[in-house]
Each structure stands twice: as C-alpha cells, then as structure tokens.
Image (tube, rainbow, N blue to C red; front, side, top):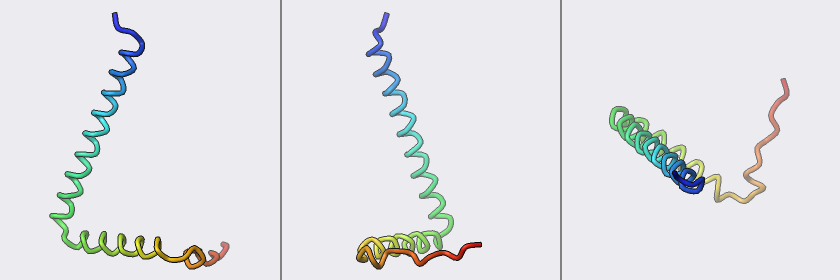
Length: 70
C-alpha cells in the first residue's frame, strides 16, 4: 500500500509528463506552421520587435490614449 505522499508525487510526475508532452506538441506544430507559411515568421518577428520596443519605452510613453466610449 502506498502512502499519500507517494500517491501525490506520482500525480505530480504524471502532470509534469502531460505538460511536457503538450509543450513538445505545441513547439512541433508551431515549427510546422512556420515552415508551411514563411510569412508567419515575418509577422512574428514584427510583433516581437514591437513588443520589445514598447518594453524599453519609458512608462509615460507606454500608456495608451483613452479609448472612445460606445
């Protein structure tokens, strides 16, 4: 008979394995999508660059202008 601690650790291992499988599948699918559609790489690079540029702006420059109310 296994203790609660052993059962808990087994459950954690199971969850970690499932998470790793999901991450691996997502990386594989992303690589396949980028290979099939080269324009996605350019779009991702532009998005990343915009995000990095925004990250390095001073906080006052990062604020969004007020959105119009509908």
